[in-house]
Length: 90
Image (cartoon, helix red, strand yellow):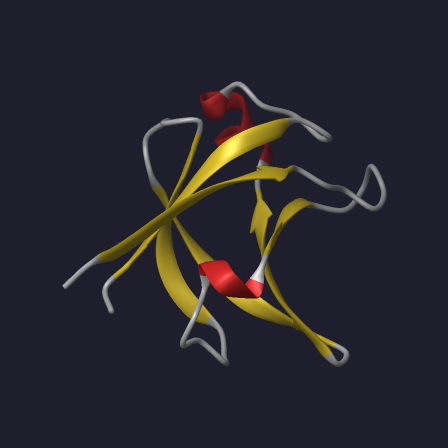
């Protein structure tokens, strides 16, 4: 049965040549300890597939990368805060 969670988060980028990414707090990915596939939507845009990864380095947060086309379709850019919806099959 699909599981859906929505929350607000900021689109981040460490350097212009690196991909954008979003940090996912542990309460939004309960039960996950490793990377997993999910359908992601930003601000209600068409969903797209992403792999959500543990941050590692003794941190309990997760993250996923965003491509330029995904950001453009959702009308968002680096440092924008948006509504994130993640749907998994578990």
